[in-house]
Amino acid sequence: MKIIVGLGNPGSEYVHTRHNIGFEVIDVLAERYHIVLSRNRFKALFGKGVIGGEEVLLMKPLTFMNASGEAVGPLLRYYKLSTGDLLVIHDDLDLPVGKIRLRQKGSAGGHNGLKSLIHHLNTQEFDRIKVGIGHPQGSHQAVIHYVLNGFSGEEAVLIGTAIDQASRAAAEWVTVPFPQVMNKYNANK
Image (cartoon, rainbow, N blue to C red):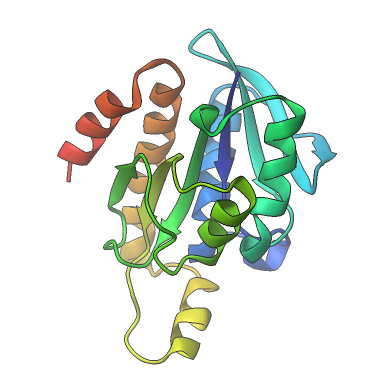
């Protein structure tokens, strides 16, 4: 079994915000593969289904972004999965709006959701799809405000395409070796 985790914040006030890109990719996968996210355990909303003939868990942590690892760690342990069975989808301030980048490992790069995952999983080695949300000008406070807001009209078109690409890459990750998926989707940039 594989697990695909989208990072975000629970609650209607965060829907369609920059920080909730991971949740949006999970929603697309759930709809495309008819996976119902109805289980609410381990501080997460998740559902089990099949992608490419393989059993998959789609997951949205309900801990808020900065504590994502509190949900992912226990779910991995419960299902006896390793970080090799894990794909994390998250927003990235350092990528332009609408660009995606796939990586097999790496630091948190200032992303608090990734910091929590790295802490609770005790490793930086897990596959990830980063979706670019751009970077605001200004102070740290500007960044907090920026990630909790939505996209402008032109940006919304770009982000819609990126969400579709990220969901397709995630689906391929289930059955195709990740280096091949990385080569395909990273080359499209």
